[in-house]
Length: 283
Image (cartoon, rainbow, N blue to C red; front, side):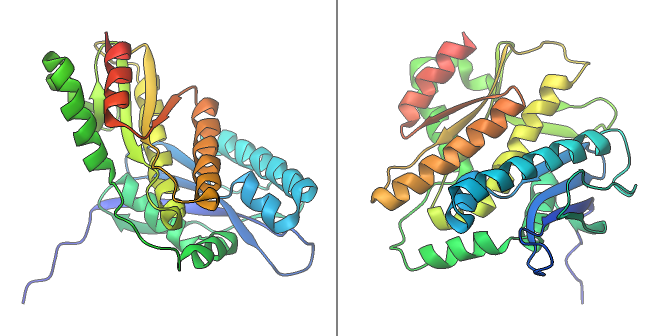
């Protein structure tokens, strides 16, 4: 009997947890610090400020969100220059860094997904439970969204075909990274919001794409250096006001995260609109 081959990509992570009410025993995982076998540090913020507002109230929720952002920034600064196994203490009381964990995955995206699912916070679970009964609809995928943007773009400018799905081998690792679109002026990754009850999973995936764009921007040995680095996001039409608010909150969270990395974000419902935007930037 032959067994399937195990994935060979090794991924390690530590989760940052918060105890909002001292001595309550209630801890929320608010962030993940991950390192791939041949990759640099990847940092994920798992909770949005709007979600904390709804759980703890606007004033307390904002204080928690600011504290979370501060601790994640300090952790990122420390582990960018130190191994993930080294000790580190959060600068604020009520925050805790868990022991390092390791797993194998097919790639960095899958490693991040494993970590996020293992460290999922109760607030995300509550949101999923609340929305689980909502009517389901067919949702897009990052690949299908990229293909639709590609189809719309080459109708207008066929010479852009060669710039889609390009791979670059990063110095120091020898591992090629694939990008949705890459030219001498413009680099883009494609992703989708998808259904509201899958936002937590898509958040980890999208943050991984932002990390890839950041790594491309910081790569020293490029034959060319794009002027613009951007995430092109499909933003679906909402079926009601509740869904519209949830989608807009998610897009705004991604916009803030992208801005922190000096990466742009373009969100639209239309592949034709995304194609026009891509053509303008790639020119």
